[in-house]
Amino acid sequence: MKKLICIWGFFMVLILSGSAILQQSGVVEARIIVENVVNSLTTPLSVDCKTVNVDYGSQTVAAGEGWGFTVVASEVDPSVECVFKDGDHAVKTVEIWNYARSGYSDVPWYNCDSSCTWEVKEDGFYYLSQETGNYKLYSSW
Image (spheres, rainbow, N blue to C red):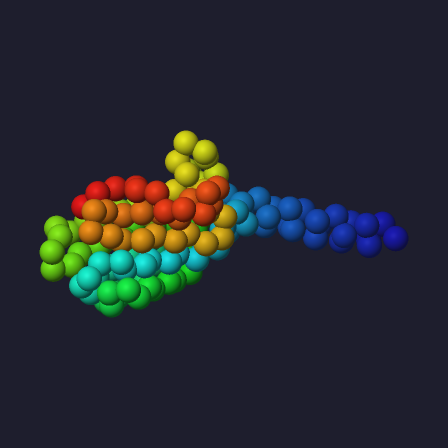
C-alpha cells in the first residue's frame, strides 16, 4: 500500500510540475480567437496578418467580401498584427488583438471573447463592439 501511495504521489508531482510549466509557457492560458476582416471598400484589399510565431499569409479580399482566420493567442504569442493596403490608401498596420490587453473595458476592441470582426471602410478601420453590436471607428487610414 505504501508503494502505491508513493507512486501515486510521484505522478501527482509530475502532473502538477507539468501544469506549472505549461502555465508558464502560456499553453494552458491560450485563447482561441476567430478574426474576421470585412472589406467595405470599392476595391480589393490586401491583408497580411501574423503573430510572433504564425504568418497567415497575404490575402486579397474582394470588395464587399470577408476573410477569417483562427488565432491561438497566449503570453508566448500575444498579439495579432495585420498590414492593410489597397490602391487608394497608404499601407496601414493595425494590431487587431492583444492577449495582455484582452478583457479590459478601456480597450473595447480587444474585448472579443471568441470572435473579433473588423470592417475596413474608406475612412478607416472599425471593430464590431461586443457591447452594442455596432461598428466603432478604431483608426483612420
